[in-house]
Length: 499
Image 1 (cartoon, rainbow, N blue to C red):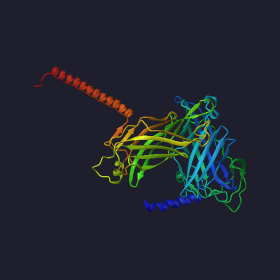
Image 2 (cartoon, helix red, strand yellow; image 1 turned 90 degrees about the vertical axis):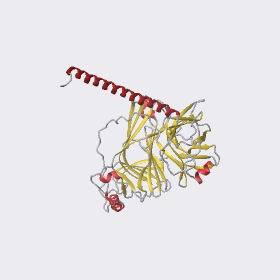
Image 3 (cartoon, one colour; image 1 turned 135 degrees about the vertical axis):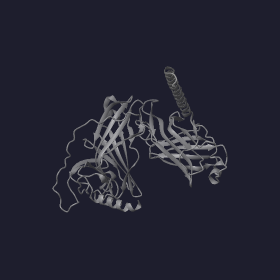
Image 4 (tube, one colour; image 1 turned 45 degrees about the vertical axis):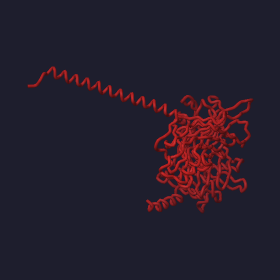
C-alpha cells in the first residue's frame, strides 16, 4: 500500500492544477480592515432547509439560498482562525469558521436563526436557536484553496434549545463550494485542493484560478457591504471578453420534509492519561439545562445546550492521594469537570506506580463532584439580561451516581440520567459509561459493569419477557407434539396390526 501513495499524490497534484467545473456559485469576499486586501474567499452555491416540528409533525418549512436578495456578510481574519458570517433578511445567520493547525485547514459550520422571523406566527418564538454541523470538515493544505463541485447534504445538530414544545431541523445542501481563508495572494484563489468525490466525477474542465471569474461578487470590508460584477482573469495573458455568467434558473421546489425525531447530543469518548496508563475513560452523550434571567421581574428561561462533538478532555490522574478528575472543555471557555474519589488512601499511587496482578482492578470509588463553569453570550442565552462574558459556576458535591465496587470493571447507564448541580443547572447524560482509577491503557468498556437502577429495571423487564416467550414456545411445542401423537395413535387403531 505504501508504494501506491506517490501515484495518489501525483493524481492529487494534477487535479490541483487542472480540475475545475463549469458549475459556479456566488462569490463572497471578506477584506482585511487593516490592509484592505481579501482575507476570505468563498464561491458557493447552497440552500438551507429549515423546519419546525411539533408532536412529531412538520408544522412549517422554509428555504434560503445563496441566490437570495439582501444577503450581507461580515467576519474576522487571522493567521490561525477566520470567520465568515452570512446574514439573511429572515434573521438567519450561516457562519463558516475556518481554522489552521500545522498548515492544515479545517471548517466548522453553524446556523443561527429566529423561528418567528423564519416561519411566521405559526412558530411565535423570538429567541435565537443555534445549530452546528456534525464534526469538523478537513480542507487539506492551508496553502491551497478547497474546491468541491460534488453535492453535499448535511443535517445540523442542536446546540441551544430554548423551547420544549417545538423542535427544529436544518439541512444544508451545498452543490458547489470553493473556499480559502489563509495564504491568499493577490486577492485570488490559490490552486485548488479538490475534494475526494470530485476526482471520480466526469465532466468538463476549465482553468479557474482567479477569484474574479465572471460571476456576481459580494465584497465586504468587515462591516461594509458592496456588490459588483467582476470580469478580470489572470490565468491567461489575453483578457477574455467580459461577460456576465447567468446560471439557468432551476424550477422552484419545496424542501423535502426532514426527520421528525427529537435532537440528541452527540456521543463522545473522553480520556485522561498518565504516561501509558489511561486512568479515566468516560463516554456519554451530555446535555446541559441552564436557567437564565430575561427581562421581566423574576422571569427566567431554560436553554438546553449540547456538549459538542469537538469538545476536548484533560485531567489529572493524581489530583490527590484519593482522587482523580476529568475536565471536558468546549466552546470558548466552558468546562465540565467530574471528580472521582476513593476512601482508600494511597491506593491511587500504588495502582499507578506499582501495578500487579494481586491487586484489585481498582479501589472502590464514586463521582464525588461535578462542576460546570463558563461565560454568558447572547447566542446560547437569547434575550438574557446577563452581561456578555459574565462568568458562571454551578457545582454539586452530591451527584446521584452510585459507588463502583472494586470487583466491577466500569459503571454503565444507558438510560437518561439527570444530575442537578444547582436549582438553575442540570447535567443530563445518555449512554453513560465510565471507569476511573484504571491501571492499563485500554479505553474500551468490557468486562463486568455496575449498572444503574434505571437500566436494571429495564433489564429485568426484558428478562421476564424473554422467559415468558420461551415458556410459551415450550407449551406450544408440547401441545403440537401431543396432537401429532394422538393422530398417529388414532390411525394405528383404525388400520389395526399388519400381518
